[in-house]
Amino acid sequence: MTLIIDPTKLGEMTDQQIVEAYDNVLNEEEQILAEKKVLRDEIFARVPNNGGVLGHYTVTKAQKFTPIIPTKKEEKETAMAALKLLGAVKVVTMEKIDNDIVESLYNKGVKLPIEVKITSYPILNEIKQPKNE
Image 1 (cartoon, rainbow, N blue to C red):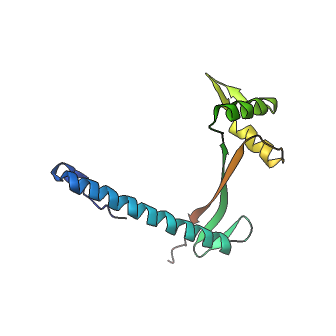
Image 2 (tube, helix red, strand yellow):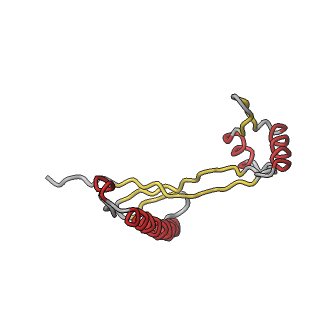
Image 3 (cartoon, one colour):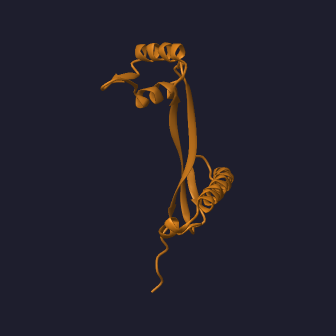
């Protein structure tokens, strides 16, 4: 991937050029994210179960678990109280959700007082081809 601007030339750029460069990067970022999603979905469609080999790569399906805490004060307090009862809150310097426990409860089918987001993504590892001697 090539940079749109040369970072060593920032001081020479006008305000307009800086703003336009930033806008261009935002547009490219949006396009890249869209392409990434399309490619990820296609990889998942081609990989059986939780992983396999595609071309010269091993592909493993991975997931990221993200609890979504309500933002409204009353809803947050209610959710935190319910999570405390489930043993899913830890106190370090302040109360904090213990993501590992929340994920474990979620995986066991426990009804949680919060939403969760599961993000799936492929982990790719190139298969090293032996050199022919």
